[in-house]
Image (cartoon, rainbow, N blue to C red; front, side, top):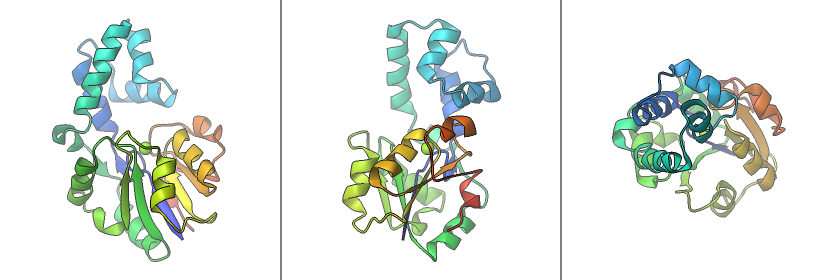
Length: 202
Ligand SMILES: [Mg+2]
């Protein structure tokens, strides 16, 4: 059996990184961490927050997006991420019953490899798949996990993760530890919804 994990919001907590970068790039923002994540849980993108709350023009939003993409995976910001507490125990429990993989939509494979090593997570996984914004998660998993079967699982915190599982014909498990609310995730019809990856059982 294969279990494929999303990275941000699923195995590691990256909310501080995203919030801190938003605050750095938007000097007018006085949003608290909770207010920012309340917007995100209500499915507001950064672009929408910028236009509705801060009156950004299209050009200003375009500038924000390029600056965001340039900094979001920099070592300074990646250092703000941490493992969800207990995630290593969960991975070692699941690793004795299944082959574990990571699939992330990060831009840089190299920085993802370095980060997994520094967080002590790399040894739990057979394969790290990084789309580098050039491939879809569906195509990269389809190509790299050769023995994919309907009883396999994809675990992630977003609607797009669930859609990937549907298109691969495998089970999907949505986690509430990341970027989307229970209500929003339900609309994608995942096989299961759980609080965090720690609650996942086969
Ligand atoms: Mg995620």
